[in-house]
Amino acid sequence: MAKVPSRRRNSPRTRGLTLDEAVIALFIGAMNANDHVAADEAARAHHLIWSTRRFRRRSGDAVGKLIQDMRVLVEESGAEAVVARVVRAIPARLRAPAFAVVVDLLLADGKLDGPERRFLRGRSPTWSRSRTNCD
Image (tube, rainbow, N blue to C red; front, side):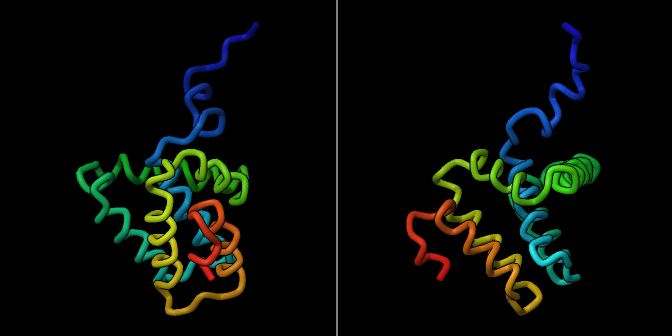
């Protein structure tokens, strides 16, 4: 049996996502919901990442690589597939707060368009205990 190179074996494409990867992938998937990332959304994502304790003490290079890796993963695998993996990677106790942060991110440009609304409604039963949290 051929050996898989260690880089590929440890790739987010072939293993479960870490919590850090899941958070970044969730932001990217949400921002891409309407096939357009508004400048306000990108700025808000930047602020959310750097104000989160998980990332604020990391080097810019490390976080930049994480963001780039998750962008590539979303582009290659598709946002829906990646966000499905995100749900499995984020512990249940953190899902409602993660959902709230995504709502905040999508509202950064002052509007919630149809695809963004569908993205959130598609996530609400998965993220929270009842559908009414999104409606």
